[in-house]
Length: 187
Image (cartoon, rainbow, N blue to C red; front, top):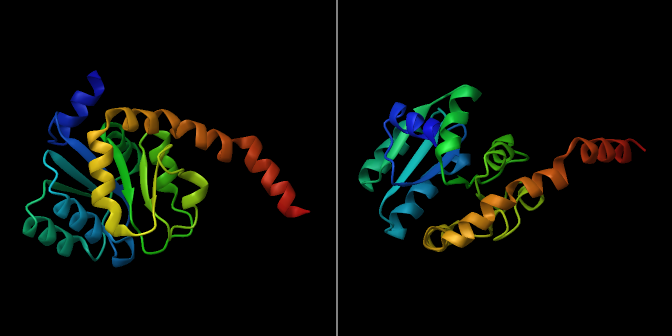
């Protein structure tokens, strides 16, 4: 808790906000504009959106966050040590990519006990995220606003999903499981 307070202060964040984080290259394919739009239409208050990454959509996303009057912080590209600090203070991780084969940032978020809201079009979505167990797999991005409201208003659900993050990682991505899968594939 002491370190979290230092990190919040260092990055000029607020203590009592619900923090949604996304770590990715800022391209249209990553669909951060839909994240901003869904937070806007949810009309949820006391939200901070932390965007870690850089790319050609950065200025467009900044303009969109201003248009929607969102509390959105853009951190640019960060090395793992720095982005890990932000992951450690966030409440939920969100990635709505139109397509991604296997984004490692999702596994990293789960490592920080961050429930993940992920788009069904992400290749490993069903492998790493189990609905209402450790996050939510969206079949339709338009459902993000509804799901955010559900998670934020239900502290028990949020805590349950946080506590289950390691379980999914340990089951599907332990060293033993990875070795077994490689050996089976090599047969």
